[in-house]
Amino acid sequence: MAPVVHVRDLQVGYGGAAVCAPVAFTLDAGGAIALVGANGSGKSTVLKTVLGLLEPVGGSVEVLGHPVDEREARFRREVSSVLDDDAYFPALTVAEHLYLTARGHGVLGARDEVTDLLDEFGLADHARATPVSLSSGQRRRLLLAAGFARPRSLLVLDEPEQRLDQRMRARLADRLRAEREAGGAVLLATHDPELVAAVCTHAVHVADDESRLLPAAEAADRIARVAL
Ligand SMILES: Nc1ncnc2c1ncn2[C@@H]1O[C@H](COP(=O)(O)OP(=O)(O)OP(=O)(O)O)[C@@H](O)[C@H]1O
Image (cartoon, rainbow, N blue to C red; front, side, top):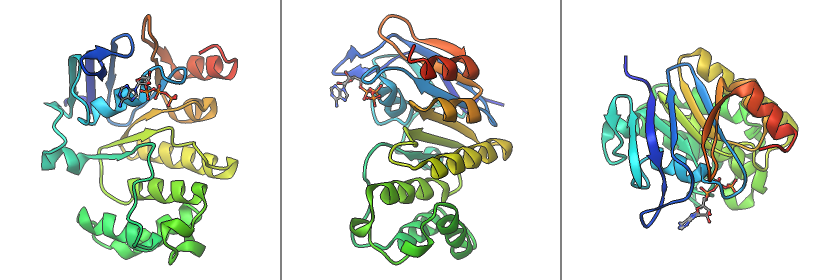
């Protein structure tokens, strides 16, 4: 079976200029890889390239055995992503957002799924609120919940810990472990050593000079010691 993500000598950047050293990794079903590194090192740029939002400057990315094309229905069916942006519909309530996402991806029993996600992400009391009336952390919970509201083989998250309180971070880690146990694959960029240690098998240290694959425990330890 093809890996979920196979990245070979991938150079990422803008206008043909690479922002970091080439990265290489293989992510299999049931696995989780963290991209770690300093601010501005290129983690989000790698994620956007894996998602087909940016062309590689060099090297290659395959998702589920195919070159990435985010316009293809097959790709969009398999890949759920939550990037670091406030992408929501201002006129829809929290529950409507989740319902629309689930139904749009053909989830049967979408209402029950939405009820579960509202509970899990601590949004039940805000189900009828529109995003503008939420706190920034609650909006982040909504976007994360939407990432889980649809079927997927690959979940891509950019700094999912941002603006979450400690309890929600722990819940997110549990959710991501469950994702792996159910055979899903997770690729995330993060600065949170606890998330790396709790969820990931490996980490890719994204950097200017050399991007390296590390065991997750070592990466978490080095982030905690501010050595990455
Ligand atoms: N749209 C863009 N056009 C040109 N350069 C960009 C663009 N977006 C980001 N960059 C640059 O690319 C480099 C990598 O940015 P990126 O957002 O990938 O870093 P990051 O590792 O995700 O950082 P952080 O930890 O701060 O989120 C930075 O130098 C940034 O200034």
